[in-house]
Image 1 (cartoon, rainbow, N blue to C red):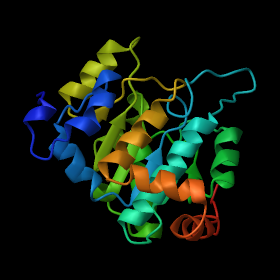
Image 2 (image 1 turned 180 degrees about the vertical axis):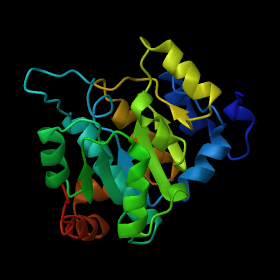
Image 3 (image 1 turned 180 degrees about the horizontal axis):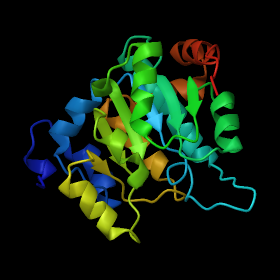
Length: 233
């Protein structure tokens, strides 16, 4: 069932308009989206189709953009601020074994990378065991069928739209697997789109940009704590 976000309590027209103009959608309404976001303590990312367009070479590699990387880091900072200095748990869960994903996660001090995973919802057991995170506190960034078992259980679901897969999008809508559907595609900075939306919805966008420009105070404290995270690959 579709809802008009402008009919939902908590709707912020100035915030939503740029994302609606990109083609972004809130299938469950903006109030539901914002309520789910308020609980988030963990960020779980698919790799292919989220950080890139999913294209592979004979070396089985796929990359990322620095613009998306900046968006993810600013989102982590915004959640750190929102949760009063609690570092969000951050993970990549991929069905493929990708060296770049592991290198990126290590560089950015993610908590863990799980590769070669065929049932991605198994990651929730690891998050619960190692970080005391429950599914309702987890935001999942995803784009394809292999991701659906995890999307079914996570608290906030960000689906990366691919116009060439209209039946997949229809399935996501009919089974209520997404709280936001991107206007952009993976490989065209859809990840940056989602990160900016989440940061703005937390009412932190101007704050995180100003702090990053100064690179002092709260941001300096955050980055020191972030860089102490050891990545498990």
